[in-house]
Amino acid sequence: MSVTSLLKSQTAGLAIAAALCLGLALPQPARADDDPVVATVNGEAIHRSALEQIRAAVPYLKDVPLEHVYDALLDNVVDLTLVAAEAKKQGLAKDPVVERNMKAAERQILRSVYLTREIDKKLTDAQIKTVYDEWVKANPPEEEVHARHILLATEKEAKAVIDQLGKGADFAAVAKEKSTGPSAGSGGDLGYFKATDMVKPFADAAFAMKPGEVSKEPVKTQFGWHVIKVEDRRTAPVPTLEEIKPQLREQAAGEIAMEIVKGLREHAEVKKFDLEGKPVKP
Image (cartoon, rainbow, N blue to C red; front, top):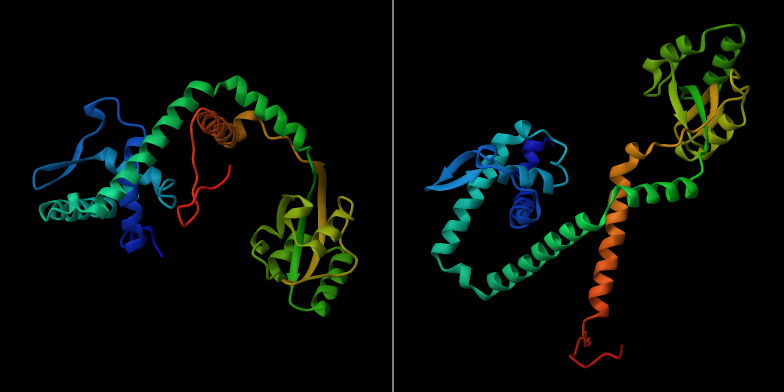
């Protein structure tokens, strides 16, 4: 299903509505010039920032350039604006269900904005560097193998290929000609991989081989029969701080958020009740 088709689904409409409700939690343009009006609905302006908020908040849209989904996204916002305006005309803004949901949405927005701002105050580059150093210690580099393979349907075919290679045939050329796997076009090249990246029979065989070696017997997996050639072995390079900084920042932010909530709980009087409304012992 295309992104445009997804935008037309009911699920997308709900996601977009939620994104707009939570829009206050997202960065806003610095100047009006940065946020042009992209449509008006009965005189009500829709700004580009509304579309940017949705694109950033909806998981399957955030990596899609805005221009690729602009028309479909704008139509969704126009429809949402029209329906919301009609609902207000009918007095639904004062409906108890709507008011209850608005209060819940308000709490979510306040929580998101508050935690985002507090995290921005507390999270420093030095903290992220500390998290990085801890991550490096906890994740020692693993061994990797660079291999090629030729995938075949039967053991007989695989053994015939091993015989052909033993007579001097070029592995990459044979892979291009005979492999049924998706890497055939690149001569069976799988690049570097860790043992955990592959199914066990394949990994066991590849990691038992030396660079330049071709498997002497076919390797059976659920995909078929493999003939493997190991090109190289190495210790995987340690990712740089910049390479994994977004993930580290997210991890550190989550830890700070938990500490903030924990501190608020420690200074609050919280009483819990069971499903029947009876007090629960702490």
